[in-house]
Image 1 (cartoon, rainbow, N blue to C red):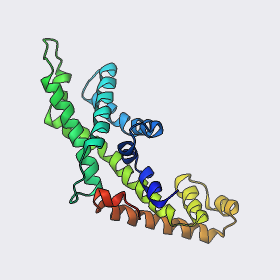
Image 2: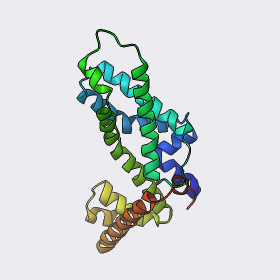
Image 3: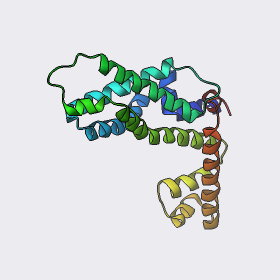
Image 4: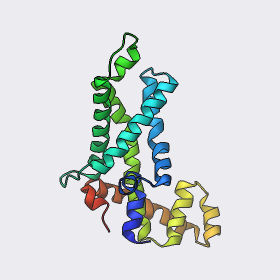
Amino acid sequence: MSSKSSITSASLLARIRHDDRDENAWREFVKRYGPRIYDWCRIRRLSPPDAEDVTQDVLVRLAKHLGAFEYDPSATFRGWLRRVAENAIADFFRTRRRAPVTDGVTSSQASLDSVEAQQDLQERLNSGFDLELLDLAKARVRSRTDENRWLAWELTAVEQISGEEVSERLQMKLPTVYSNRSKIQKMISDEVKLLDGLAPADALSQS
């Protein structure tokens, strides 16, 4: 796999933007962002069926905006992701305002259609955007890291396996296991900071 393809595939939203028929990406997309939107709907006092409908609607609009959204060379990657979501959310609320209002409209439905509600939903999606940056950062670091060094970090930092067990499994001295974990963690942290300041096209380009 080329460096460019590995970096692009690391960003879930970018994968959908490049190929909206990527079923694996769609499943991960729904898994990552769906619960945040659903919880927001329930907090706004929507019933479970209504919350599911709104969640699906927002997810579809968010995905559609990925394909139509134009890169802004002056924007950061994080800013680009948030702008895509803001456009989709604004579109969703505009559609709600255009829908006929019936006598049976509830206070929860009214509270959903507000500036406060839009801002609240945006905040709930922010952590998802941070995961996009982290996925990209990890892909970049992994592409230039020895496999054993990467495994030492992944097994200890992600899978929470003891350093002693990792040392035995990888046939690596224990101090080296911990040294690799620390170095890889710092590389990922530095990469996140770098990506956060890049324009979207640069963040997804070949390193």
